Image (tube, rainbow, N blue to C red; front, side):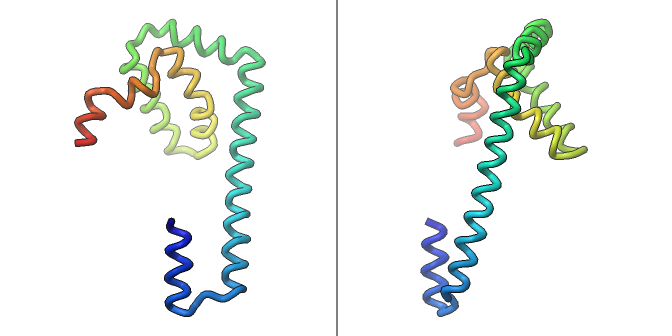
Length: 123
């Protein structure tokens, strides 16, 4: 919708040329390719991590903490927040395995979306 709006406005202001359109399509394809490589890299990391037994190691660690799902979710958010200060790389590595941690802690996407706080924030 936004792309068509941009094309419409560029046409209305008579600033749309074939050269600009070609450059916009090229840059869009370049950005999309970079995002796809991020997906490939995170999938590869998660697959190797799981194959080497990292999933089992983390699940035992999480179960050993004996936290409620809400406590674990808050702890995971705190870890991500703190990792965000130093660099983006540790944050990306943590998020790729976060779904394993949340599943082992008993937190599901449905539980997050249907929580009381979520409903209050949506109002």
